Every structure is written in C-alpha cells, then in structure tokens.
Image 1: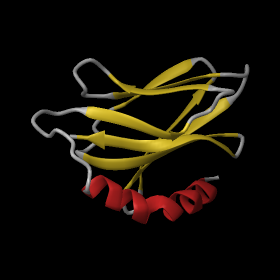
Image 2: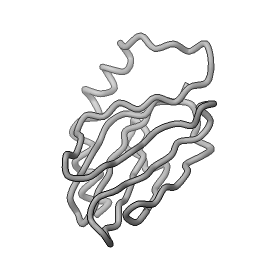
Image 3: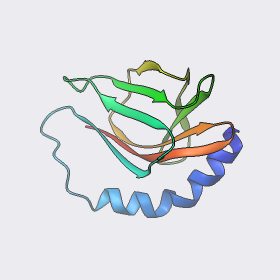
Image 4: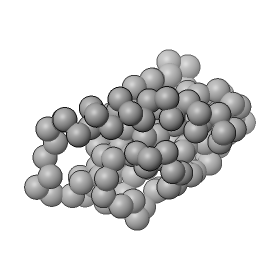
Length: 120
C-alpha cells in the first residue's frame, strides 16, 4: 500500500515543488496550514492544527469499521510520518519539522484525499 502511495505522490512532486517555491506565505510566526487537492465526498477526513499551531490532528469518519492511513512525505518523497486510525477516531501528529509536506489518506488501498501541509 505504501508503494502505491509513493508512486502516486512522486508524479506530482516536481510541479508541487515549483508551486510552493513561488507561493507567498507568511513566515513571521510558527503556523501549520493544510491545503487539500483531492477531497472525498464519501468520507469526512479532517487534517487541522490546534489553536497554537503546534500539532496536527488527523480524524476520519465514514463507514463503520473502516481503517484510515495518513502518510506525510517531505518534498523529496521520503515518508516522515504515518498514522492509522479507525472510523470516528482522532490522533495527534507532533514534532513535525518546519517545511512543506505532501499528505495522502488511504482506506482499503483507495486514495481518499491528498494535499499539502506547510509548517512555518
């Protein structure tokens, strides 16, 4: 399953890296922002920072008994964080270094959502 995520991800790395390097984002304080490219209509996936922007929460809701996998990749395609949760659960991702990351959310080998996480 990780192989599939990596293959899908590597196809977009070059264009995303160019987009990020040319985008104006504020760097005057530590923040975490999430930008979704693919958004599921069937599942309710949430990836969001806490109020002080120090940690990232990952939650999912959809079908009973389903398991969701979150993969967080650096811009070179290296897996830096992974989280697995069940339906209607939430987990916390902390100690994420500053930088830009691509994320993929899967369930049963189906890519549900993907996008960009920026930690400044």
